[in-house]
Length: 142
Image 1: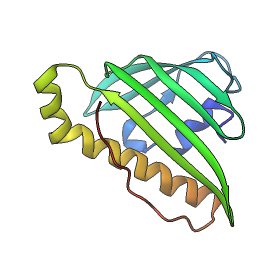
Image 2: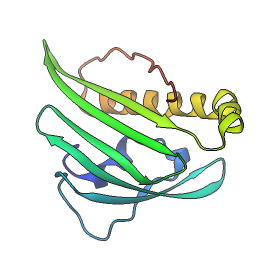
Image 3: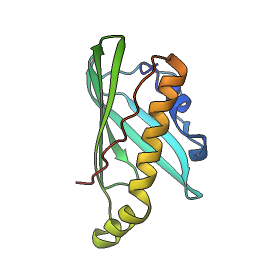
């Protein structure tokens, strides 16, 4: 699932109209660049990430080179637990615009990110089963 960035659309909420736009199919590896488009609040946005850490089967990290954020670092970890695998996302980010960005975070961004990662947890569970327990993420900007 996580080895192919084009699979990300399967666990991304449909309301984002998410699409990987990188020209070729690639397997995740250190240094891989991935281009995406999506819509947020109706606005078309582009995103480019780089895989900066790749340590299968334990973790990988993608960092945004171009995104709506000043800083975005997303760490994915995979831990064997009784009955399956614990998949955990840790996101560190910083919004632009100083106090206006903080207001946007309070009014919409935080709730949106929680919704996206909650959807992802449910989609992983629905696709692979396992009866996971949904733990709502703590979303906190840098």
